[in-house]
Length: 452
Image 1 (cartoon, rainbow, N blue to C red):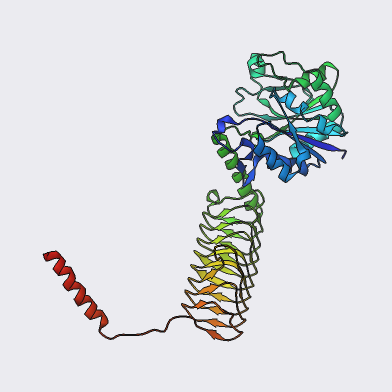
Image 2 (cartoon, rainbow, N blue to C red; image 1 turned 90 degrees about the vertical axis):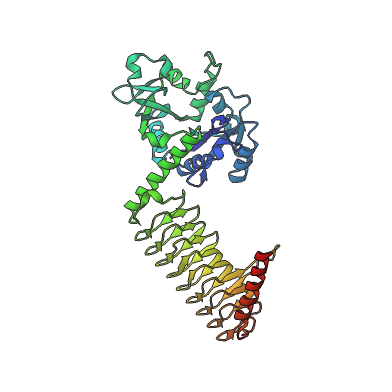
């Protein structure tokens, strides 16, 4: 494999999104669309990536600078078409010698093997490679006209196509590859002699053919090249991603009783023999190991779940959660930045934040780790095999020793020694007959108000 680079076009205004957020920063599968294209470029071995931005797209520029560096940004000003956009990256690639692919910041689902197929054609003699798809409704798409051997003869826009060309269902995705020197040489010859006065990237096919260069087209599925220009298309891309991800996990041995209700992120990692009940949502950064069960309507984000754990229903695992083997986190329990050791349990109605819970510990219903004083967060440590009674508040920083017991309803503000009992609550008192007297008195007052 030779040197490879990618140009990602992300200068569009995205007005049809009707959003203050730039189009390419909208997410599919928990990842900004432009980041999908960056990840794709990395996946196919691109050593250089240039993202073409609008001069008004400060948010996109900041995002790219923070993720892959300021030197990855090129500015298209003014916007004069796709060919002009690619030329805007020429200076950033001045020292690059190798093959170049043009991707799009609003086309998030292109598989790596499709781009590999384009590079394969370049490695075997093609000067230009174009990614195409068989469209269910070709409509206004440009048609890819090929010969019997798969050589690309022309890209014909729908409005300029003959009836026989309009019958072609093989359409242009916009993704192209060529040696960098060839790409920029051909673009230098492209003119803007058209109704819009723009420079079109697609014109390089005609120019290449005219100079005797070979052009090839490779095919992928239509869903793989779905471009997003509106909220409707964003939802369609999300649906396509989720459908594919569900099928991947089912094929990999994950059980889902209602897969259409389970939602994944781009990096969700689930082992075989995991059971996912309906309504589970995986935000980015989640790993679930074999034998675990995620019960209905649970939400997991940036959390690691080891083997044979049971989560939910209605549980929330927030960033920084680490559950070791055999942990149980039950209904309406929220865990954040907390490690739970093997076999630890928190079965009901608890908040466990900024903590470390030892193996075999039991956290009773209604327990709260009071981790925040309005300014800073503090750590709560519960030792192995400790037992925290229901409705307890552990005021951090505090340590409950191994094997210790905390009595129900306690507010614990000081460390508890190993194997001891700690009770921190008011002494119970009882006044015989008080309730009867109270009710009689209040009934008299209420009756008097009614008469008045």
